[in-house]
Length: 150
Image 1 (spheres, helix red, strand yellow):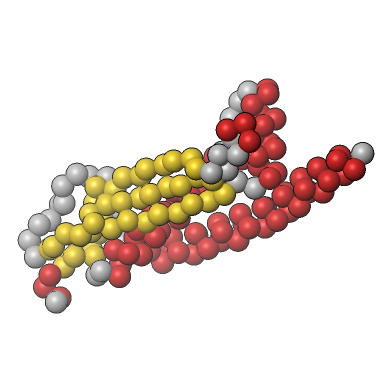
Image 2: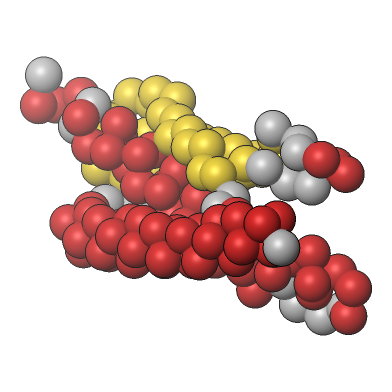
């Protein structure tokens, strides 16, 4: 009986705290996306303009952990099959955050755009039964920096 109560308390706390943290993170992401929207980041391999520009590698890296409630929902979904939406939002936040960090680094260098943008994703911190504990996303690309302003 005590184990059931502890489980329900952890599940409830995971839901409430995790939901609050996720909403707060999404608000922060949307605010920074609006601010950095003027700096284009695209997947094209070669820069559209080469004159007067130097190039630099820029990166953005983030590790986001799965909360207890999402892990529980994912385990239930594994029993019945279907989309694991609790992990989809985790990956969405991680990708968007990594891209924002990469764009912020490019902006600090005075870049006009970032091209050849790529993502690398890895699950880390495996828990019991090899469940995902955290996900790491790295966004990287080549920043075009205007050399005329230096």
